[in-house]
Image 1: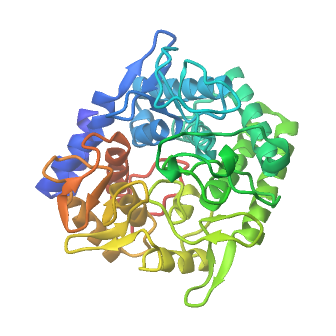
Image 2: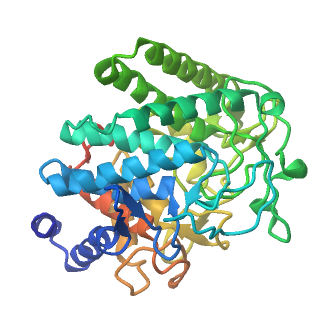
Image 3: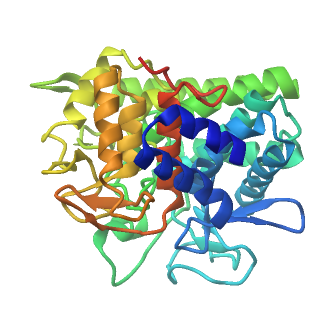
Length: 428
Protein backbone atom coordinates (compact mmCIF):
# COMPACT_ATOMS: atom_id res chain seq x y z
CA UNK A 1 0.00 0.00 0.00
CA UNK A 2 2.83 2.41 0.81
CA UNK A 3 4.33 2.13 -2.66
CA UNK A 4 0.93 2.73 -4.26
CA UNK A 5 0.34 5.84 -2.15
CA UNK A 6 3.82 7.17 -3.03
CA UNK A 7 3.18 6.63 -6.75
CA UNK A 8 -0.16 8.43 -6.62
CA UNK A 9 1.23 11.32 -4.57
CA UNK A 10 3.88 11.85 -7.24
CA UNK A 11 1.13 12.16 -9.85
CA UNK A 12 -0.88 14.65 -7.78
CA UNK A 13 1.79 17.39 -7.61
CA UNK A 14 -0.07 19.33 -4.92
CA UNK A 15 1.08 19.04 -1.31
CA UNK A 16 -2.33 19.55 0.30
CA UNK A 17 -4.15 17.12 -2.01
CA UNK A 18 -1.33 14.59 -1.68
CA UNK A 19 -1.61 14.74 2.10
CA UNK A 20 -5.39 14.41 1.94
CA UNK A 21 -5.09 11.38 -0.32
CA UNK A 22 -2.55 9.64 1.90
CA UNK A 23 -4.70 10.11 4.99
CA UNK A 24 -8.03 9.28 3.37
CA UNK A 25 -6.86 6.29 1.34
CA UNK A 26 -5.20 4.61 4.31
CA UNK A 27 -7.96 5.50 6.79
CA UNK A 28 -10.27 2.56 6.14
CA UNK A 29 -7.41 0.06 6.08
CA UNK A 30 -5.83 1.32 9.28
CA UNK A 31 -8.89 2.06 11.40
CA UNK A 32 -11.99 0.09 10.37
CA UNK A 33 -11.07 -3.47 9.33
CA UNK A 34 -11.32 -6.37 11.76
CA UNK A 35 -10.25 -9.81 10.58
CA UNK A 36 -12.43 -12.58 12.02
CA UNK A 37 -11.49 -16.08 13.13
CA UNK A 38 -13.39 -17.58 10.17
CA UNK A 39 -11.32 -15.54 7.71
CA UNK A 40 -14.02 -12.98 7.00
CA UNK A 41 -13.58 -9.23 7.45
CA UNK A 42 -15.78 -7.07 9.68
CA UNK A 43 -15.81 -3.36 8.76
CA UNK A 44 -17.01 -0.62 11.10
CA UNK A 45 -18.23 2.66 9.55
CA UNK A 46 -15.84 4.75 11.64
CA UNK A 47 -17.50 6.44 14.57
CA UNK A 48 -20.22 3.72 14.80
CA UNK A 49 -19.12 0.18 15.76
CA UNK A 50 -21.59 -1.61 13.45
CA UNK A 51 -21.05 -2.88 9.88
CA UNK A 52 -23.36 -1.48 7.22
CA UNK A 53 -23.66 -3.62 4.09
CA UNK A 54 -23.60 -0.48 1.93
CA UNK A 55 -20.83 1.44 3.66
CA UNK A 56 -18.49 -1.51 4.01
CA UNK A 57 -18.56 -2.22 0.27
CA UNK A 58 -17.89 1.43 -0.61
CA UNK A 59 -15.18 1.70 2.04
CA UNK A 60 -13.02 -1.06 0.54
CA UNK A 61 -13.82 -0.49 -3.13
CA UNK A 62 -10.72 1.67 -3.89
CA UNK A 63 -8.52 -1.17 -2.58
CA UNK A 64 -9.55 -3.27 -5.57
CA UNK A 65 -6.78 -1.43 -7.42
CA UNK A 66 -4.28 -2.96 -4.98
CA UNK A 67 -5.99 -6.36 -5.05
CA UNK A 68 -5.02 -6.75 -8.70
CA UNK A 69 -1.45 -7.54 -7.53
CA UNK A 70 -1.70 -8.01 -3.76
CA UNK A 71 -3.14 -11.35 -2.62
CA UNK A 72 -3.51 -10.20 0.98
CA UNK A 73 -5.65 -7.22 -0.05
CA UNK A 74 -7.71 -9.47 -2.32
CA UNK A 75 -8.20 -11.89 0.59
CA UNK A 76 -9.34 -9.01 2.79
CA UNK A 77 -11.92 -7.86 0.24
CA UNK A 78 -13.14 -11.41 -0.29
CA UNK A 79 -13.50 -11.59 3.49
CA UNK A 80 -15.73 -8.51 3.39
CA UNK A 81 -17.89 -10.08 0.67
CA UNK A 82 -18.22 -13.34 2.58
CA UNK A 83 -19.17 -11.51 5.77
CA UNK A 84 -21.77 -9.43 3.94
CA UNK A 85 -23.31 -12.50 2.33
CA UNK A 86 -23.46 -14.29 5.68
CA UNK A 87 -25.33 -11.31 7.10
CA UNK A 88 -27.80 -11.31 4.20
CA UNK A 89 -28.50 -14.99 4.71
CA UNK A 90 -29.06 -14.25 8.40
CA UNK A 91 -31.56 -11.42 7.77
CA UNK A 92 -31.95 -9.92 4.27
CA UNK A 93 -34.07 -7.03 5.59
CA UNK A 94 -31.38 -5.71 7.96
CA UNK A 95 -29.05 -2.88 6.98
CA UNK A 96 -26.42 -3.02 9.75
CA UNK A 97 -24.93 -5.76 11.92
CA UNK A 98 -22.87 -6.35 15.05
CA UNK A 99 -19.49 -8.06 15.05
CA UNK A 100 -20.90 -10.73 17.39
CA UNK A 101 -24.41 -11.65 18.54
CA UNK A 102 -24.11 -9.11 21.35
CA UNK A 103 -27.62 -7.74 21.16
CA UNK A 104 -26.28 -4.21 20.70
CA UNK A 105 -28.58 -2.08 18.59
CA UNK A 106 -29.25 1.47 17.56
CA UNK A 107 -32.77 1.47 18.97
CA UNK A 108 -35.41 -0.91 20.30
CA UNK A 109 -37.67 -0.74 17.26
CA UNK A 110 -41.04 -2.38 16.86
CA UNK A 111 -41.55 -4.65 13.85
CA UNK A 112 -43.26 -7.83 12.75
CA UNK A 113 -40.09 -9.92 13.17
CA UNK A 114 -38.04 -9.71 16.36
CA UNK A 115 -34.52 -8.46 15.74
CA UNK A 116 -31.72 -11.00 16.06
CA UNK A 117 -28.92 -10.14 18.54
CA UNK A 118 -26.59 -10.02 15.51
CA UNK A 119 -28.59 -7.15 13.98
CA UNK A 120 -27.71 -3.54 14.83
CA UNK A 121 -30.57 -2.04 12.81
CA UNK A 122 -33.32 -3.47 10.57
CA UNK A 123 -34.14 -0.65 8.19
CA UNK A 124 -34.82 -2.31 4.85
CA UNK A 125 -32.96 -0.60 1.98
CA UNK A 126 -32.58 -1.99 -1.55
CA UNK A 127 -28.98 -0.83 -1.79
CA UNK A 128 -27.96 -3.00 1.17
CA UNK A 129 -28.52 -6.00 -1.09
CA UNK A 130 -27.00 -4.40 -4.20
CA UNK A 131 -23.59 -3.46 -2.81
CA UNK A 132 -22.37 -6.97 -1.86
CA UNK A 133 -23.21 -8.29 -5.34
CA UNK A 134 -21.40 -5.32 -6.89
CA UNK A 135 -18.31 -5.87 -4.71
CA UNK A 136 -18.20 -9.59 -5.50
CA UNK A 137 -18.47 -8.80 -9.22
CA UNK A 138 -15.76 -6.12 -9.16
CA UNK A 139 -13.44 -8.42 -7.20
CA UNK A 140 -13.81 -10.93 -10.03
CA UNK A 141 -13.12 -8.32 -12.70
CA UNK A 142 -10.13 -6.86 -10.81
CA UNK A 143 -8.39 -10.09 -9.85
CA UNK A 144 -9.94 -12.94 -11.85
CA UNK A 145 -11.04 -14.57 -8.58
CA UNK A 146 -14.23 -16.60 -8.63
CA UNK A 147 -14.05 -18.34 -5.24
CA UNK A 148 -16.40 -15.72 -3.78
CA UNK A 149 -19.19 -17.21 -5.90
CA UNK A 150 -19.63 -20.08 -3.45
CA UNK A 151 -22.60 -21.65 -1.65
CA UNK A 152 -22.92 -18.60 0.61
CA UNK A 153 -23.18 -16.40 -2.48
CA UNK A 154 -25.72 -18.67 -4.15
CA UNK A 155 -27.93 -18.71 -1.05
CA UNK A 156 -27.70 -14.93 -0.65
CA UNK A 157 -28.64 -14.37 -4.29
CA UNK A 158 -31.64 -16.65 -3.81
CA UNK A 159 -32.68 -14.61 -0.75
CA UNK A 160 -32.21 -11.30 -2.58
CA UNK A 161 -34.18 -12.24 -5.68
CA UNK A 162 -37.00 -13.69 -3.57
CA UNK A 163 -37.16 -10.55 -1.43
CA UNK A 164 -37.15 -8.19 -4.42
CA UNK A 165 -40.00 -10.17 -6.00
CA UNK A 166 -42.01 -10.04 -2.77
CA UNK A 167 -41.44 -6.30 -2.54
CA UNK A 168 -42.65 -5.78 -6.11
CA UNK A 169 -46.08 -6.27 -4.54
CA UNK A 170 -45.36 -4.81 -1.11
CA UNK A 171 -48.94 -4.00 -0.14
CA UNK A 172 -50.16 -7.57 -0.55
CA UNK A 173 -47.18 -9.90 -0.25
CA UNK A 174 -44.81 -8.28 2.25
CA UNK A 175 -44.85 -8.67 6.02
CA UNK A 176 -42.12 -6.09 6.58
CA UNK A 177 -42.95 -3.22 8.92
CA UNK A 178 -40.90 -0.79 10.99
CA UNK A 179 -41.92 1.48 13.86
CA UNK A 180 -39.68 3.74 15.92
CA UNK A 181 -41.15 6.00 18.58
CA UNK A 182 -40.13 9.42 19.94
CA UNK A 183 -37.99 10.14 16.89
CA UNK A 184 -37.95 12.44 13.85
CA UNK A 185 -40.51 11.49 11.19
CA UNK A 186 -37.82 10.34 8.75
CA UNK A 187 -36.63 7.72 11.27
CA UNK A 188 -39.76 5.56 11.07
CA UNK A 189 -42.15 4.34 8.38
CA UNK A 190 -45.43 6.17 7.88
CA UNK A 191 -48.87 4.55 7.85
CA UNK A 192 -48.40 2.66 11.11
CA UNK A 193 -45.04 1.26 10.09
CA UNK A 194 -45.98 -0.08 6.65
CA UNK A 195 -45.04 2.94 4.52
CA UNK A 196 -47.25 4.89 2.12
CA UNK A 197 -49.50 2.81 -0.19
CA UNK A 198 -47.99 1.87 -3.54
CA UNK A 199 -49.29 0.51 -6.83
CA UNK A 200 -47.56 -2.43 -8.48
CA UNK A 201 -45.22 -1.03 -11.15
CA UNK A 202 -42.52 -3.63 -11.73
CA UNK A 203 -40.12 -1.75 -9.46
CA UNK A 204 -39.27 -3.19 -6.05
CA UNK A 205 -40.22 -1.37 -2.84
CA UNK A 206 -37.81 0.09 -0.28
CA UNK A 207 -38.60 1.21 3.25
CA UNK A 208 -35.59 3.47 3.62
CA UNK A 209 -33.13 5.47 1.57
CA UNK A 210 -29.34 4.87 1.63
CA UNK A 211 -29.26 7.73 4.15
CA UNK A 212 -31.27 5.45 6.50
CA UNK A 213 -34.10 8.02 6.26
CA UNK A 214 -37.58 6.71 5.49
CA UNK A 215 -38.86 6.88 1.93
CA UNK A 216 -41.83 9.19 1.38
CA UNK A 217 -43.00 6.92 -1.46
CA UNK A 218 -41.84 3.34 -1.62
CA UNK A 219 -40.36 3.17 -5.11
CA UNK A 220 -36.92 4.70 -4.67
CA UNK A 221 -35.83 5.21 -8.29
CA UNK A 222 -32.00 5.35 -7.93
CA UNK A 223 -32.04 2.22 -5.73
CA UNK A 224 -34.08 0.43 -8.39
CA UNK A 225 -31.54 1.58 -10.99
CA UNK A 226 -28.82 -0.04 -8.89
CA UNK A 227 -30.88 -3.24 -8.63
CA UNK A 228 -31.11 -3.41 -12.44
CA UNK A 229 -27.32 -3.06 -12.69
CA UNK A 230 -26.48 -5.79 -10.19
CA UNK A 231 -29.13 -8.15 -11.58
CA UNK A 232 -27.34 -7.86 -14.92
CA UNK A 233 -24.09 -8.61 -13.08
CA UNK A 234 -25.81 -11.76 -11.82
CA UNK A 235 -26.74 -12.71 -15.37
CA UNK A 236 -23.05 -12.55 -16.31
CA UNK A 237 -21.92 -14.42 -13.18
CA UNK A 238 -24.55 -17.13 -13.62
CA UNK A 239 -23.69 -17.56 -17.29
CA UNK A 240 -19.89 -17.41 -17.16
CA UNK A 241 -19.06 -18.76 -13.69
CA UNK A 242 -21.96 -20.70 -12.19
CA UNK A 243 -23.33 -22.23 -15.39
CA UNK A 244 -26.82 -21.72 -13.97
CA UNK A 245 -29.30 -21.15 -16.80
CA UNK A 246 -32.24 -20.79 -14.42
CA UNK A 247 -30.51 -17.96 -12.54
CA UNK A 248 -29.64 -16.28 -15.84
CA UNK A 249 -33.29 -16.23 -16.85
CA UNK A 250 -34.61 -15.28 -13.40
CA UNK A 251 -32.18 -12.39 -12.94
CA UNK A 252 -32.70 -11.12 -16.48
CA UNK A 253 -36.49 -11.19 -16.18
CA UNK A 254 -36.46 -9.35 -12.85
CA UNK A 255 -34.02 -6.75 -14.19
CA UNK A 256 -36.28 -6.16 -17.20
CA UNK A 257 -39.38 -5.82 -15.01
CA UNK A 258 -37.74 -3.31 -12.68
CA UNK A 259 -36.25 -1.33 -15.58
CA UNK A 260 -39.61 -1.16 -17.34
CA UNK A 261 -41.08 0.15 -14.09
CA UNK A 262 -38.42 2.87 -13.89
CA UNK A 263 -38.97 3.95 -17.48
CA UNK A 264 -42.78 3.88 -17.18
CA UNK A 265 -43.33 5.30 -13.69
CA UNK A 266 -40.00 6.85 -12.66
CA UNK A 267 -39.88 9.80 -15.05
CA UNK A 268 -41.81 13.07 -15.20
CA UNK A 269 -42.02 16.02 -17.57
CA UNK A 270 -40.54 19.12 -15.95
CA UNK A 271 -41.54 22.49 -17.38
CA UNK A 272 -37.96 23.79 -17.33
CA UNK A 273 -35.72 20.71 -17.65
CA UNK A 274 -37.79 18.37 -19.82
CA UNK A 275 -37.97 14.66 -19.08
CA UNK A 276 -36.23 13.90 -15.77
CA UNK A 277 -36.09 11.03 -13.29
CA UNK A 278 -38.00 11.36 -10.04
CA UNK A 279 -36.29 10.40 -6.80
CA UNK A 280 -39.31 8.49 -5.48
CA UNK A 281 -42.78 7.59 -6.69
CA UNK A 282 -45.72 5.42 -5.63
CA UNK A 283 -47.09 4.42 -9.04
CA UNK A 284 -50.24 6.46 -8.42
CA UNK A 285 -48.79 9.65 -9.89
CA UNK A 286 -47.17 11.06 -6.75
CA UNK A 287 -43.47 11.96 -6.90
CA UNK A 288 -40.61 13.34 -4.85
CA UNK A 289 -38.34 15.52 -6.97
CA UNK A 290 -34.95 15.82 -5.29
CA UNK A 291 -31.69 13.99 -4.80
CA UNK A 292 -29.87 12.87 -1.69
CA UNK A 293 -26.12 12.90 -1.09
CA UNK A 294 -25.97 9.20 -0.31
CA UNK A 295 -25.33 6.60 -3.03
CA UNK A 296 -27.28 5.26 -4.88
CA UNK A 297 -28.53 8.65 -6.01
CA UNK A 298 -29.92 9.98 -9.26
CA UNK A 299 -26.69 11.88 -9.79
CA UNK A 300 -24.81 8.56 -9.50
CA UNK A 301 -26.75 6.73 -12.24
CA UNK A 302 -23.77 6.57 -14.69
CA UNK A 303 -21.34 5.81 -11.83
CA UNK A 304 -23.51 2.83 -10.94
CA UNK A 305 -23.63 1.75 -14.58
CA UNK A 306 -27.33 2.33 -15.20
CA UNK A 307 -26.91 4.78 -18.08
CA UNK A 308 -24.32 6.66 -20.08
CA UNK A 309 -23.16 10.05 -18.86
CA UNK A 310 -24.36 11.64 -22.10
CA UNK A 311 -27.85 10.09 -21.82
CA UNK A 312 -30.37 12.88 -22.47
CA UNK A 313 -32.71 12.11 -19.57
CA UNK A 314 -29.75 11.82 -17.21
CA UNK A 315 -28.34 15.15 -18.37
CA UNK A 316 -31.75 16.79 -17.91
CA UNK A 317 -31.96 15.26 -14.45
CA UNK A 318 -28.43 16.36 -13.61
CA UNK A 319 -29.23 19.97 -14.50
CA UNK A 320 -32.25 19.80 -12.21
CA UNK A 321 -30.29 18.21 -9.37
CA UNK A 322 -27.50 20.79 -9.50
CA UNK A 323 -29.92 23.70 -9.28
CA UNK A 324 -32.05 25.38 -6.66
CA UNK A 325 -34.99 23.28 -7.88
CA UNK A 326 -33.46 20.41 -5.89
CA UNK A 327 -34.39 21.26 -2.28
CA UNK A 328 -31.10 19.75 -1.04
CA UNK A 329 -28.78 21.65 -3.37
CA UNK A 330 -26.95 24.42 -1.55
CA UNK A 331 -24.58 27.20 -2.60
CA UNK A 332 -22.37 29.19 -0.24
CA UNK A 333 -19.24 31.33 -0.16
CA UNK A 334 -16.91 28.32 -0.01
CA UNK A 335 -18.72 25.47 -1.74
CA UNK A 336 -21.81 24.30 -3.59
CA UNK A 337 -23.33 20.88 -4.05
CA UNK A 338 -25.88 18.37 -2.83
CA UNK A 339 -26.68 17.73 0.81
CA UNK A 340 -29.29 15.64 2.56
CA UNK A 341 -32.34 15.86 4.83
CA UNK A 342 -30.19 13.65 7.07
CA UNK A 343 -27.93 16.62 7.94
CA UNK A 344 -28.53 20.35 8.62
CA UNK A 345 -29.57 22.82 5.93
CA UNK A 346 -26.70 24.41 4.00
CA UNK A 347 -24.54 21.34 4.59
CA UNK A 348 -23.27 19.47 1.51
CA UNK A 349 -21.58 16.08 1.45
CA UNK A 350 -18.14 15.00 0.33
CA UNK A 351 -19.72 11.79 -0.99
CA UNK A 352 -22.00 13.70 -3.37
CA UNK A 353 -19.10 15.92 -4.47
CA UNK A 354 -17.11 12.80 -5.40
CA UNK A 355 -20.06 11.46 -7.39
CA UNK A 356 -20.52 14.81 -9.14
CA UNK A 357 -16.86 14.78 -10.08
CA UNK A 358 -16.85 11.23 -11.40
CA UNK A 359 -19.98 11.86 -13.48
CA UNK A 360 -18.91 15.25 -14.86
CA UNK A 361 -18.22 15.25 -18.60
CA UNK A 362 -15.71 18.07 -18.58
CA UNK A 363 -12.37 18.63 -16.86
CA UNK A 364 -13.25 22.14 -15.68
CA UNK A 365 -16.05 20.86 -13.44
CA UNK A 366 -13.82 18.07 -12.10
CA UNK A 367 -11.09 20.58 -11.20
CA UNK A 368 -13.59 22.86 -9.47
CA UNK A 369 -14.77 19.95 -7.32
CA UNK A 370 -11.21 18.92 -6.56
CA UNK A 371 -10.53 22.42 -5.26
CA UNK A 372 -13.65 22.20 -3.09
CA UNK A 373 -12.25 19.06 -1.48
CA UNK A 374 -8.99 20.87 -0.91
CA UNK A 375 -10.59 23.67 1.13
CA UNK A 376 -13.30 21.73 2.95
CA UNK A 377 -11.57 19.23 5.23
CA UNK A 378 -12.15 21.46 8.25
CA UNK A 379 -8.48 21.33 9.13
CA UNK A 380 -8.71 17.59 9.87
CA UNK A 381 -6.93 16.29 6.75
CA UNK A 382 -9.86 13.90 6.35
CA UNK A 383 -13.31 14.03 4.77
CA UNK A 384 -16.58 14.25 6.66
CA UNK A 385 -20.27 13.53 6.25
CA UNK A 386 -21.67 17.03 5.68
CA UNK A 387 -20.09 20.47 6.00
CA UNK A 388 -21.37 24.04 5.98
CA UNK A 389 -21.08 25.64 2.54
CA UNK A 390 -20.01 28.89 4.21
CA UNK A 391 -17.74 27.44 6.91
CA UNK A 392 -16.14 24.00 6.37
CA UNK A 393 -14.96 24.04 9.98
CA UNK A 394 -18.57 23.23 10.83
CA UNK A 395 -19.14 19.60 9.88
CA UNK A 396 -20.79 16.33 10.91
CA UNK A 397 -18.91 13.10 11.65
CA UNK A 398 -15.22 13.68 12.16
CA UNK A 399 -14.52 10.00 11.43
CA UNK A 400 -16.54 8.75 8.43
CA UNK A 401 -14.70 6.16 6.41
CA UNK A 402 -17.10 6.08 3.44
CA UNK A 403 -16.44 9.75 2.70
CA UNK A 404 -12.66 9.20 2.86
CA UNK A 405 -12.92 6.33 0.39
CA UNK A 406 -15.09 8.31 -2.01
CA UNK A 407 -12.63 11.21 -2.08
CA UNK A 408 -9.83 8.72 -2.74
CA UNK A 409 -11.78 7.11 -5.56
CA UNK A 410 -12.48 10.49 -7.18
CA UNK A 411 -8.83 11.51 -7.04
CA UNK A 412 -7.74 8.15 -8.45
CA UNK A 413 -10.34 8.54 -11.19
CA UNK A 414 -8.80 11.88 -12.16
CA UNK A 415 -5.56 10.02 -12.87
CA UNK A 416 -7.35 7.30 -14.86
CA UNK A 417 -6.92 4.79 -12.03
CA UNK A 418 -10.39 3.25 -12.17
CA UNK A 419 -11.44 -0.10 -10.72
CA UNK A 420 -11.64 -2.77 -13.43
CA UNK A 421 -15.20 -3.63 -14.32
CA UNK A 422 -16.57 -0.35 -13.00
CA UNK A 423 -18.39 1.98 -15.41
CA UNK A 424 -16.48 5.10 -14.29
CA UNK A 425 -15.76 7.27 -17.29
CA UNK A 426 -12.21 8.31 -17.98
CA UNK A 427 -11.04 11.82 -17.19
CA UNK A 428 -11.39 14.22 -20.10
